[in-house]
Amino acid sequence: MLDNFGLQPLNATVHIALLHILANRYGKQAIIVTSRLPVSKWYDVIKDPTLTDVLMDRLTANAHRIELDGETLKRKKACVFLYFFL
Image 1 (cartoon, helix red, strand yellow):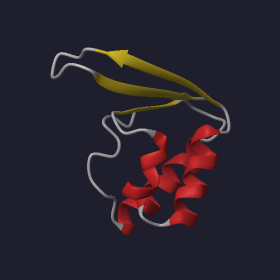
Image 2 (spheres, helix red, strand yellow; image 1 turned 45 degrees about the vertical axis):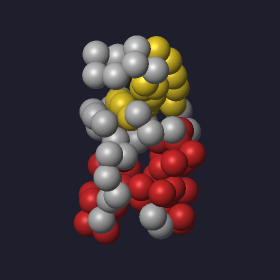
Image 3 (cartoon, helix red, strand yellow; image 1 turned 135 degrees about the vertical axis):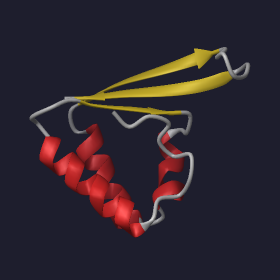
Image 4 (cartoon, one colour; image 1 turned 60 degrees about the horizontal axis):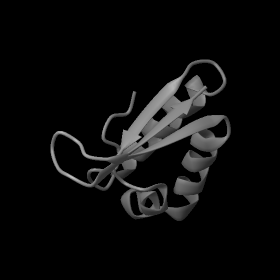
């Protein structure tokens, strides 16, 4: 589970580790990603457009996306995105 994805920009080491994790789990085990950051902003967090495309392809190929709008315990009018990847 990747919780609160996108809170800060990712460095090169984290990029590669994340890519390996996704590649190893792809089609075998579920991955759950939670984020308050819309997918359109993930390119700003990852910084490398090519790597972002690769990661997004792995994450979204068999994904079930659930977008929740509404109040959270921490602030009103927050939006939380849940991604379930199989």
